[in-house]
Image (cartoon, rainbow, N blue to C red):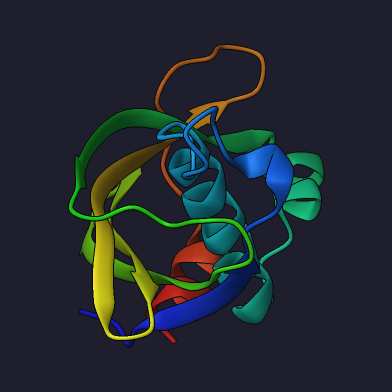
Length: 133
């Protein structure tokens, strides 16, 4: 559907567990940050979206598969690809790479909800247009 977006992240001591490898839950943080940078690159401001349309994006579902570990000081490439764009949701495929080694694969479903109602809401037309650009 869309071009791949990538964002680099360096592994710091705080990202690792007692075994010296990246703690598994931190990949969800890396994926979240990469999606935020993807939005910024598409000139979508989450704060503006909330102020103008009273909606926010929330994570609805995740499915993550771990293939290989990352370690302290590794530089990872986190990728973002829109797999499916719905009326009120976006399905992403995300990956974490260290060089040519695939470390983690994730499917993340993000929903658009009303700030007050906390119920599904259509993604604003101007945001959809920017996502599709």
